[in-house]
Each structure stands twice: as structure tokens, then as C-alpha cells.
Image 1: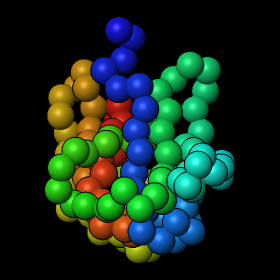
Image 2 (image 1 turned 135 degrees about the vertical axis):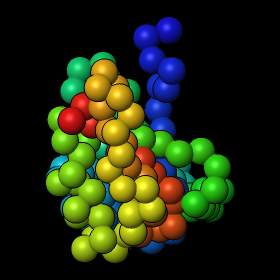
Image 3 (image 1 turned 120 degrees about the vertical axis):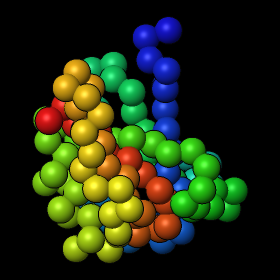
Length: 122
């Protein structure tokens, strides 16, 4: 097993609002697609890295409780974290050091009400 996680889906109540939020916070472009009756917006990955998406589907409901996905914020999560509130979210755990070897994490509530984490090496 190369990774503990193979794929993740972040539920969106308002699909376009969620896309705007994550494109702003993560400073990236999400690729839209439809799969059956689900609308999806894929986070960019390189090579065979772990991927994930925003998803709008009747069976998927945003929640601040339950599993928490940690998005890779690169070398420093501070710029992404600074974009959370202006994009319509709120920071619930500020940038916090885990250890010199592991780096830093932070947690926010997104525009849809999901609890999501960020991780960086610095």
C-alpha cells in the first residue's frame, strides 16, 4: 500500500460557491466533470499522487463532524490559510507546529460547512 488514502470527496451544497472557495484558497483551478448524477470538481495532482474532488450529489451532505481531509498546502500553509476567511470560510485551528520532521497543520470550516485541514512542511 503506497498511500493510506486513495481518493477523497468533499461534499458541496452549493457547487459553484464551493469551487470558487477552493480555487481561491488553494490557488488552483479545479476541473469540472459529471459522473452519473454527481457533479464533481477535481483537485489538480501530478503523476500518480492521491487525488480528490468536490462533489454535489443528493447522498452527500456537508458536515463539520466526521472525517477530516488534510489538503497539501505545499511548503507553507500560511498563504492558503490567510485566504480562508476572505473566501467565505473560518479558521478553527490556526497554523500549529506538529514537529520539525512533520511540519504544520491548520483546520478550517469551508464555505459549505465542512471541516477541512491543511498540512505543510514549514
